[in-house]
Length: 167
Ligand SMILES: CC(C)(COP(=O)(O)OP(=O)(O)OC[C@H]1O[C@@H](n2cnc3c(N)ncnc32)[C@H](O)[C@@H]1OP(=O)(O)O)[C@@H](O)C(=O)NCCC(=O)NCCS
Image 1 (cartoon, rainbow, N blue to C red):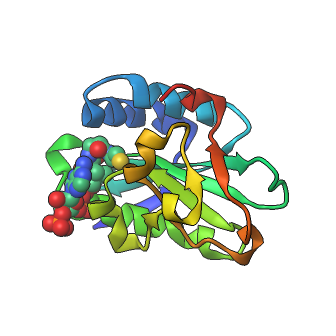
Image 2 (image 1 turned 90 degrees about the horizontal axis):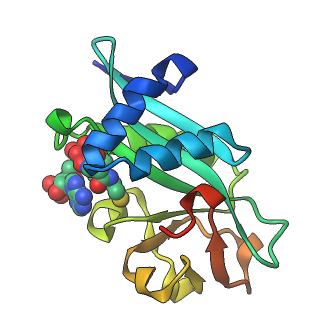
């Protein structure tokens, strides 16, 4: 049975190995490590099967200029150990990690990813709602969940933690 729990310090090496293997490059694991070490980490959650971590998802705090009152976060990176992809683990992990973020604290949750995958969790394209990620070329992949009335009338560029800079 797959279970979900917060990542602990003892998990870091295994988790970063999974993230690097899933993306086929070290960049996303480096972003995860940098966010985790800073002030903007909201949560990192792991999926565990038979005592072994098989997936991980990070949520970090993001911001919008002129919306200091809004509580915004972003999902990603999310990664499933390559031999275990396509079994539903990523979807179950994302649902489990989103659940505690549904307590009314968060006015919106953003992510960059394939809309065909993330629509199942309720994410929708952010650009038609006025929100963008660093450059307009990312609009087809930039999505948002639960835009609260706190954001009414606001629009602009979502600022990610410095660890994401340039990506
Ligand atoms: C993307 C990822 C987290 C999904 O987790 P998973 O456990 O493999 O996926 P699930 O079994 O929950 O869901 C499978 C579905 O996801 C789709 N899917 C898997 N990877 C996808 C991707 N990169 N883009 C779009 N859809 C994807 C499959 O086509 C399948 O669709 P279906 O349910 O309509 O048949 C995982 O495949 C992964 O780690 N990929 C490499 C890293 C990555 O791309 N991370 C996300 C960046 S946004």
